[in-house]
Image (cartoon, rainbow over all chains, first blue to last red; front, side, top):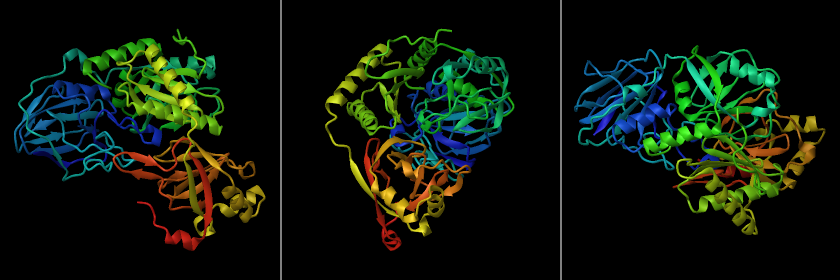
Length: 307
Length: 237
């Protein structure tokens, strides 16, 4: 009773909503890069929000369902086919034993989530199934390995689930990206000139983006404040090293860092950023913490857990 | 735009709210042993009850980041809970911090930077070793990598800036110094600290949970061993 992986890549991993409680020992929380698409996948299948799914960055995945199951693909549209038949995203599908799932490279967006009803049965590794390669935690065997061809990822056949994500909540990853920033950390140490630059210029995603951080390119910010003693880093923090170009710190970030930070990207926008590719453009606007918090609480109430 | 902190600053710590569901506590004296012990104490009190609103704690250099469930606790209620924990930690602070002695081999065969460090400091190699193992250190922060402890208390005469170009490969178990701190690399990684010794001391114990031999606040001493003694010790897994 499993999904047999035929073709995969080192960018494919098992993720749940993250490993909490281990940052004090220096471990990364890991978890889904696009938490909104991740949460919708589990929601549509009526799974608890922290159910393990497969995160597929840049597609190129082939696998065989060894047992009947309902499943869903959310996130980047990847021209998936089930035994040659088109398999649209954002709505549940039914797979029968022996059927092959073929996932191509997405044309817009870059991260697709594959979830099954009841979830993949992956052992908990320090409280979570989330794969952390660096800390050798999580994943299929609990050692932080990404998926390998030949892996068999267990699941149980459940009664059919029919569901989907309402159209208005399906994002367009080709749309212009507006990132909302909660000004915090050393925001006030950046001069008015640097802040004005930051909020007025168009940034381009660099080709140096990973589960640790997304780098943005543009005109370097002037007068970067000095590097301080390392301090704890929140998810989505925007650090600016001496080169003046911002880096948004993502799920596999280090727990401490000393570069000055402009603030933190609103949680809801982090997934939208994660979906963008090298060369895509982004602009920044400020949002108050109170407003961002209200939105996060609403999202967490809706999905019934932590995003 | 309104950036005003919605809640007043309490007397027991300075507060900052970096994101929707985090609060960052600042304490005075980021490099003081007392501060590290205080943060470790508060973290331990907070964790003790395993409250559902608490997601994660990241401490270091006078700061403690509390990642909480904003959908389960209001900011006002959170502050009261944190204050209570801080008060409780103060009363419980008579407990001695854990003390660890770590055997280190300072033989040049496993201490590639020792010669250059001595030269740059204008000291003999023996003097560098004596100074390094003569001091008592305290874990001021854990981060960068799983089990990587920043140890404060390095004698002023051993102070050197980091390497201008980090080494591509620092072996696990390397004992290294930079600025006013010393550390032990828990895993092989690129790194910019100067390597002056080697230990087989196990920093990370993986069981049902993760235990560190050098948690925040711990006191640490180094004890010189010979190359032969190092080779007789079992390398950690």
